[in-house]
Amino acid sequence: MKKILLVSVISLCLLAGGVYFLFVKKSPPEYKTVMVERGSVVATVSATGTLNAVTTVQVGTQVSGTIQTLFVDYNSLVKKGQVIAQIDPAIFNSQVEQSQGSLQVATANLMKAKALVTDARRTMERNKQLLKDGIVSQGDYDSAETNYQEAVAAVKAAEGSVQQTRGSFLQAQTNLRYSTIRSPVDGVVVSRNVDVGQTVAASFQTPTLFTIAQDLTKMQINTSVDEADIGKVKVGQPAVFTVDAYPEMQFRGVVSQVRIAPIITQNVVTYDVVITVENKDLKLNPGMTANVSIEVTRKDDVLKIPSTALRFKPETAGESAMQASSSKKRSSGASNGQKVFVLKEGKAVPVSVRIGTIDDSHVELVAGELHQGQEIIVEQVLPKKKAGTAGGAMGPRF
Image (tube, rainbow, N blue to C red; front, top):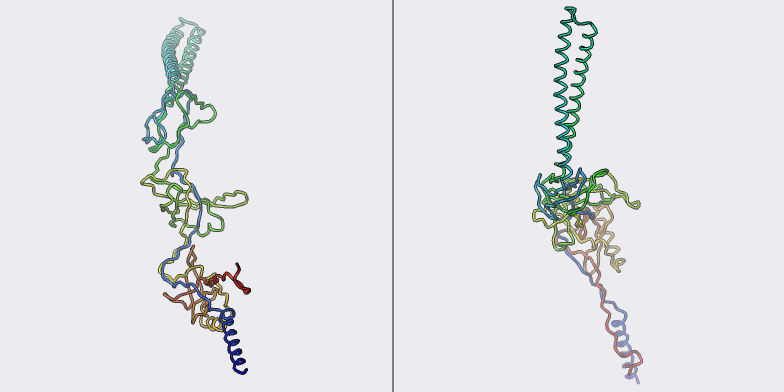
């Protein structure tokens, strides 16, 4: 009987120990760690903008008429002074001929008036001598003097007529020249707004015939930067950007202008930041949307850690209270309250640090007891649940 009782007690002890190890005792937590490394931390400001040519010229017409000929089209390379379109010049040629004829008539009238002045002056001088000799009366002399003065006035009027008709002639010649549309700059035609046979009217507003980008090898991005970030952006800062046409490529530029005029859209304030871009291979086109990152701060050869290490909080942090207190005393130089955890004897021990520049994935370590190559915890690995057996406490199910 005693043997049976002893065997029962031993069996119960073994069963209790098995239950304890299987269900009560927990395995120590596991952590994922990374090393503190030395490298660069780059803080950026993100913005979206549109690519534009640095100089874009809208070519219009100063005269009305019908488009007779187009010499260029989209994407045509043009030189300054090159003929790019022709308005029907027939009406302008006739105006030149008419104004030229009027000028010739006015010139002839001037010559006639000058001849009359000469004749009236001779008559007046002759009557003046005859008046002294008593041959003509004072009235005849006064009449001759009046005729002379009228002739001089007629010359003045003829000269004004000549000047007026000359102006009309020059205007007609100018309109004739304007009927030939020339490129004002060297560049590329990016848009054409007229077709052959179309009538353009320049009475009230100059119509735009072409848009010419002066130099597409140098472009600019007009970005909208939020008011919260505009204080960080300065002229000369480097920038990188991507466009949807080449998602695998990164392009580079430089901040050339930070415009102080606010742009308010639905109570959101942004500022236009201009970024100059080299486009020697002409891959970038006007109007493309650019996703820009402006480098506002760069720290090279500094200690850095992943930003995920600052967000990590172990589930068993309470067991490390003593270590945390002593660690804080040792790290009194770190004053901004940030903490990371290191692994010591299988436990997560907090270490206070002070951070500096922050980028998308890393932060700069300014102060603390961490050193290069030291491992810090970024994640706690949860234990995998064991797959349950097919049967329960009541035995297998069929």
